[in-house]
Image 1 (cartoon, rainbow, N blue to C red):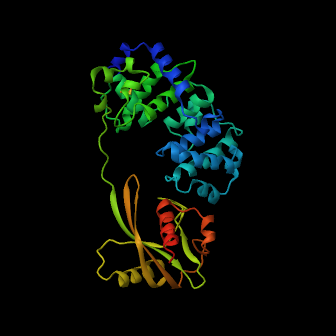
Image 2: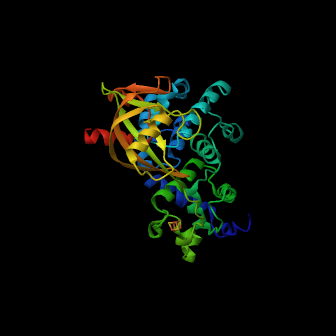
Image 3: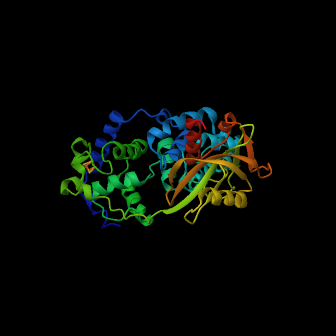
Length: 365
Ligand code: SF4
């Protein structure tokens, strides 16, 4: 590791900290989670910001805190309401883990978010990045908070040529932060690195001429900033063909289904759908047969509404969306419901099914 961090010797750490932190204090964006250091709010924001853009997160964060202003409110909330608050953000296990973890904080730590690495890291869904972010921002503990953004920035500053797609590489960067972090203001230091990655040292075209730490940057000095970081490509996502049905009965009620409590998009709601693993010759007949066999619904007057694609990290759904009327339903068990169009608002649907609902409403079938 020492070898990988040999360029650290070329940096005057104190000047680097000052340049970085004063830039952050002047230039930081006004974001709702920066208004105070409440560990619960910092926690919610950090979980939301994983794999999601800041602009997308802002309205979700504000609404989430309106609905669950305190850790106790979230611990006591119905799961259905919590999923609804997260609807559209994706990666729903994040919010399920968050709720389990706040319950644990209530039971085990009297409702106070732990302020040390051991206890906080033992909470569900709290990985090394989130632990470091909460500890440094909410409690001023000089712990590293290293995500892909921070790895990119430091790979350039220190000219580190390790593959950041490898999980073991994170340790190299955590060690770098431990050696560079300001002990007086670890919160600003960590946030400044993240902000620099978001605003200046961006993935494809870093704005080196505007950069507050350019003088310290080995990558810029060597002119290799665009070649870093090294990141090997992920394996290709699996493609899944599906047909999904927006089905109404004679009273105009819509048939919806609750997904299983385990696996992808667990406990969210969806429109009835089937996976198709062969090319359709006689679309309607085959779909009618499939929906009857697999879902137990008899569909009449099929209409194709369009196609929806949804990309997950490991797979891609290509959904052919249909509408139609149904004459036979699965029994109304807990997992199946017939609801009015207005009542659809009360259920949490993942993005592809929200798009499907929009297709239906926009075209006024
Ligand atoms: Fe990134 Fe360029 Fe700044 Fe170096 S000088 S940290 S490469 S923006």
